[in-house]
Length: 229
Image 1 (cartoon, one colour):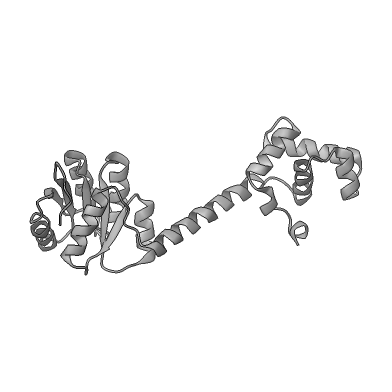
Image 2: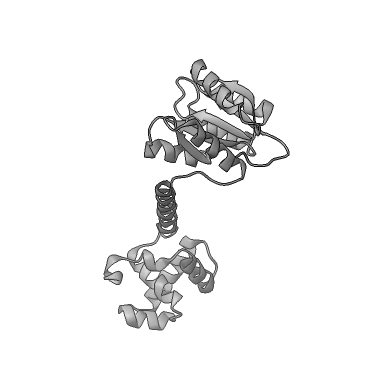
């Protein structure tokens, strides 16, 4: 049963094959809560039509030959018409392509071989504001985000030498220069020089700010291997 709605969902169909567009339009316009407001046969035309008609849903082939790809068009639509939600149509569950589409702003994808009822359900799901991403894809995306965060953390310390990392970790623990010197078998003046270098490289003005920076970027994950063994 269609969802009750005061206004129908406005849909833009994007595919380089006229026969496919006609078939999709026929199926979708049989639904009382859908209206196809425009069609496009290329990625660049999809962007123009989206900006002109501002549809609720864009149903777009992920593979668009020549010019803008479906993924590039999705990215531009997401940038210029953020209220338009893009569902990608794909012939195969190609993980990398689908991941690229999600990164570009797609809120879901549907295999072309699914029945028309599945596509209709998918559009209604997106129309309600829900996402339509396979759980395995969500897991992969979360892992990608986690890895990107770790790379960003590590880059925060990229200017520090292993010894400076050890000293910074001890600063986080609240040790004084004298205590650090004793623990690392260094002279107190040497530690003082190291601390000055650390503050300069991290572009902070004092030990407290350096400690906060280190904690925020999870220094414990990036210490030299001999400190984590």
